[in-house]
Amino acid sequence: MQHRAKKRFGQNFLVDANIISKILLSINPQPDDHIVEIGPGLGALTKPLLETQQHLHVIELDRDVIPVLNRLPHHERLTIHNIDVLDFDFTRFKQSLSDQAPLRIIGNLPYNISTAVLFHLVNHRDVIKDMHFMLQKEVVERIAAKTGTHDYGRLSVMMQLHFDVSPLFTVPAECFRPAPKVQSAVIRLLPRQHMEINTDERAPFESLVKQAFSQRRKTLKNTLKNLCDSKQIEQAGIDPAKRPQELDVSDYIKLFRQLNSGS
Image (cartoon, rainbow, N blue to C red; front, top):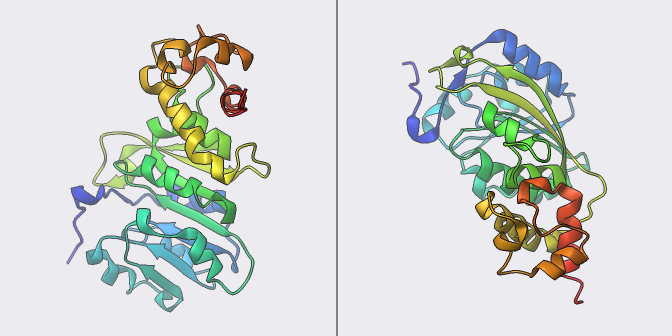
């Protein structure tokens, strides 16, 4: 019996062989890599990965596709974690592995939870080597957006703070079954080696950025009036009359430092 995609899981199964090959070339998996695939679905990427990997871990919430995955060739190399990815502790999982090789995360992320998954993975970036995701094209454009553009926002700042961002290629809707109403794109995220915001500062920094973009048409002195005044913004070397999308990541770091300097 053929598995039918479930709307509540945001399922759109990749079926285009050329796109599958392009994704695998982009990932360039090595046999002893620790790869975790999020949302394997019916195994479009899982199947070819099992041909080359010593072992593969997948996170799949839909119990109905697990029998399909367990029938794939070389399924004895496969471990299925039947859990919501937002509840999966990547750091603890990494600590449970027998060697020090970092994690590589891949997946075709459901459109309805993709942003939540990305923010969840920020909390585990220290144990991750790289990530390759298929996302809604609009989300990829927001992640990679340049300062001052329409797409630039909270997601842009937070992802570019933590990762080197490389959009790779677009995936047309007809490459999926069922075909989604939007185009997709593949993106590579490499955790930055040197972080100017440490682990304890991530949450308050994110709160600052979130507040700044809460009303993106207003100036900083208005959007941040509950956190600081114009003088404090000026002391960070930033014009309070600017709008949030006019500040790059380094500007937000300078503002965060000023507001937490105690002066």
